[in-house]
Image (cartoon, rainbow, N blue to C red; front, side, top):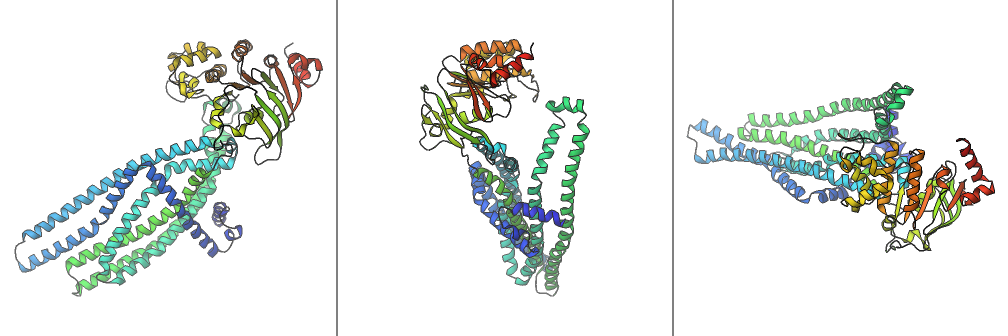
Length: 629
């Protein structure tokens, strides 16, 4: 277990404390964990701000209910003391109970009823706040994730951070509610402790001395639990992937044909067994240490209780005072422990909030500048790549190098080349999903970085080979191309006709209202080619000045492909179009063809010109044509 704990602490602290501290003595480790825990409390103000934003009225009422409820225990004990002493006096002196006595009984009943109602009101507010907080944070995570760079989604470390942020969006409400509890528990502990101090301070000191070791032990193991959970995040992501892989429509065919089920389940079992062993090892240590430290708290409580009994039988205290102090000692002991425990829990869970707040702190590098220009309407000069070089973040390999070409209004350019030559990367640069490592991309003579990013994207329609298949209605699937037109049925139908998707949709039982895909009940799945037509309709609906199709007909048969491009040729007249395809029967329709090789433009020209040269393009064309002879 030592290696597990050390590894977990190093994994957690590697970005926060020097490595030599994490590997130092046990005393150094103990101090560093406490420093980290206290440092994490700085997460509370921004977290509480998020809570406030999610439901200010619920927060206010919930806190007011807790504060009022905190005074109920000492009030009930004080009234009970009066009732018991009055009862003893009535029995001893044989005189009847006065109306004031029965008013005390009624008062205790009223206090008990109020305490019960306040408890229910607090639970009600907690439930409302949990729903509001989960909704608010989940929406913030979705919105923030949508603004981040594409490069973030290609980084495994980012996926770990995103996964933890998604968990924090739903799991940290317990910590938020704990902040309210610690206020209530502190008030209860203070009021009960003050009542004990009236009689003797030694009882209170004894209770605190017994609670403190248990608090330190629980807090230490809670921190180790966070450390272990942090280190296990990549393994848990693997488990999620294997769980989906082992039981999904997309993988079912190959799992059956290749006999992969046993291998995947065995791999899942191996990883989950490793996680289980780590968890059990920590739980065992926590069980034994917690049990021993718990004995100290129990011993302190009963020592104080025995001391009060001794004072009573010695004649120093009345029976009512005995009952009052017994209740106060029990309540104070319980609440002091709860204050320490809850505060420790808040500090430890604040460490988890680090992941959520760090996720919110991630800022995109590809973004609009202040005072950015609107996209030109219409585009007059077109796009120009000027000495563009690009390497993906975190790598030194240049995917594109010293690229120069123009895409002018009304022009259709095709990109060809073997896989890995940078065709899709060029599209990502043109649409400013990335910025060049070197060089410039100009639009009408102005750097793309000077334009408002969202406005620029409104003038672009892109369909990638791995296009999205939205498990929504056919109408919604097409509307995703221009979400502002989601209620414009005529525009959606017109776009479907342009892409030939209309014929597919009209055969569905519910037409444009038909749910597509198999994820939800009542959905109907489409073939790959039919999905592709729906995706093309999405691009046509956008009616943008630049249309980019990355392998747009890969799933279509030859006849359907021909019909699509006959339409494409007419629909892109007067627009800029960029086409990526491996089929030369498709790219020959372009005005100009760029042949990419090793991130550079190896050849450039129209289909007939490139064939006449007899170089790279001509050889690729002949090789593909030979397969059809």
